Amino acid sequence: MFRRGFKSSSEEASLKIRRKLVLASTAPVDPASIAELLAIPILKPQELSDLPQDVCSRLQQDHSDAWSAITVSDGKSNLIVLNPTHAQTRLNSSLAHEIAHVILGHEPSVMFLMSQPETVPSQQEVILRTHNREQEDEANWLAGCILLPRDALLHIRRLGLSDDRACSEYRVSPAMLRFRINATGVDVQGQRAQYRGPSPRSK
Image 1 (spheres, rainbow, N blue to C red):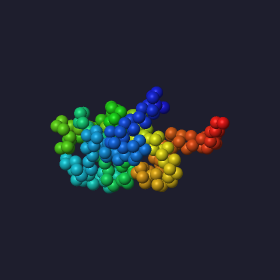
Image 2 (tube, rainbow, N blue to C red; image 1 turned 90 degrees about the vertical axis):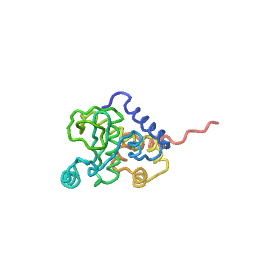
Image 3 (cartoon, one colour; image 1 turned 30 degrees about the vertical axis):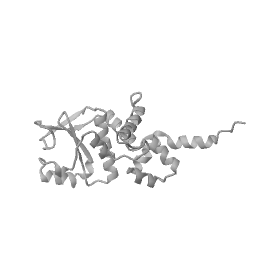
Image 4 (cartoon, rainbow, N blue to C red; image 1 turned 180 degrees about the horizontal axis):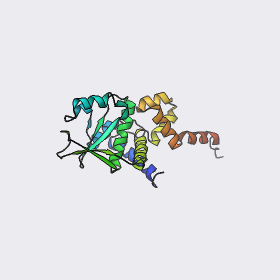
């Protein structure tokens, strides 16, 4: 599914981010702090000065369910527009996903041109980016690692945290927690360890 070494490099990227933010490998991370670290502004639709009010209203009302975060680029720098009507757990996931595209250096497969908001460095146009399925899968995986690295999942299980408590502390949805637990095999690993039992003491 992924190129060789991608999963391990994604785990390492998540840990590297935490080191730069001076966080423990098991600590929750706010995706907004990663965007700040990468100098990626985060805006709401109403903060885009060139966006007509009626379009802004439709984005947050009529079409609110259709989008959660969009990366806008002028070819040199990026900004992320977030849908403020969504739950924080969904926004965290979407923001981590958009950041993952930037970290991975993904080139968009389709580009839509629009007039430039004042917050983007001077260019004639800005670009709304979409990506192919392979890039979307990679961004999904890296986003999951960013929010819930393997170290964090093992930490959650060692402490015996309930899923609700873990979701609250790491600000993720139950679906994201379950995805990461299943994808990493953390529970299977724990069950095997219990089955083997304690190591025999040397005499």
